[in-house]
Image (cartoon, rainbow, N blue to C red; front, side, top):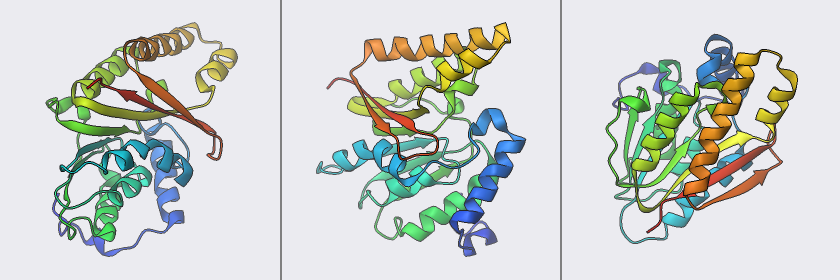
Amino acid sequence: MPASSSPELARRYSAWQRYRLFFSQFREHFHATGAIAPSGGVLAEAITRPVAEAAARTRPLRITEVGAGTGVFTRAILHKLRAGDQFDIYEINPAFAPVLENCIAASGARERGVTCQLHIADICTAAPQPDRDCIVCGLPFNNFEPALVERILGQLVASLRPGGVLSYFEYLYIRQIKLALIRDRAERERLRAVGAVVNRLLAHHPHRAVPVVRNLPPALARHISVPS
């Protein structure tokens, strides 16, 4: 989507406007949005830390963001990129497209020589190319079916070059809390199966976890590496 494709880009989106848009999409598309408010800046810095670390390299970076929403992580990534870097942003909900294009325009990334491409598409439709240095994922895995979680995580890991990092987050203890409160057996089994998918991935890849208590609700940023 070119930067000039929508008159909405002339608008500046305040934090309140982004919150209202996010909340409206939460109400309409809960399973794809997964939270009632965008993530906070502290979580954004924690989850994009591998991008900052990769920026020390001399060669251009290839970065992907999946599930960009209103652009909290997008803005943090954009400010870390330099001339020659490539940034692909995937968001399935077209309602977020004007805000995301506005994030790109406001950052001046394209003027700095960063190639930015916004894809309003399902990441599952993209062909995996193992050239990504970092992938930042904001998808609400706990809302998805286990088979879809396994498919997405498998595709994202397959898209990383050796030494690349997949970063995503989940709310602290959210699965455990839901399991304790939910009485529907099928839903409990779904949540357990999602947890099993994530645990299998963690068991086979080096990873680190960063608690972010200054987020509402508190979260855990996970960074999964592909060995060099």
